[in-house]
Image 1 (tube, one colour):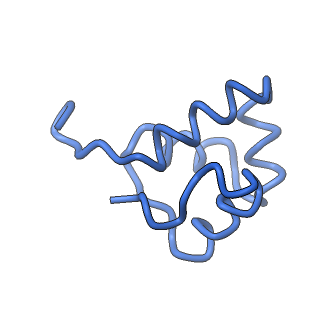
Image 2 (image 1 turned 90 degrees about the vertical axis):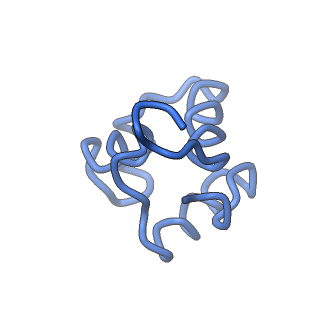
Length: 71
C-alpha cells in the first residue's frame, strides 16, 4: 500500500509502457478516446478504469497491460 492506495500491476505496467514507447500521456489518452486528466487519474491510482476502458488499454498496448491487473 502506498499513500493509502493499493498498488496494481496494470497501473504500473501502463506507466512503464507509455514511457518505453516515448509517448506523451496526452497522445496515449487521445488514442484511447479519454481525456488526459482521466488517464492521469488511472495512472495515479485515484480511479480504476471501467471494464471497457481496461480492454482498450490491453489492446492498445498489445497486451503489455493486462485488463485483469487493475484493483
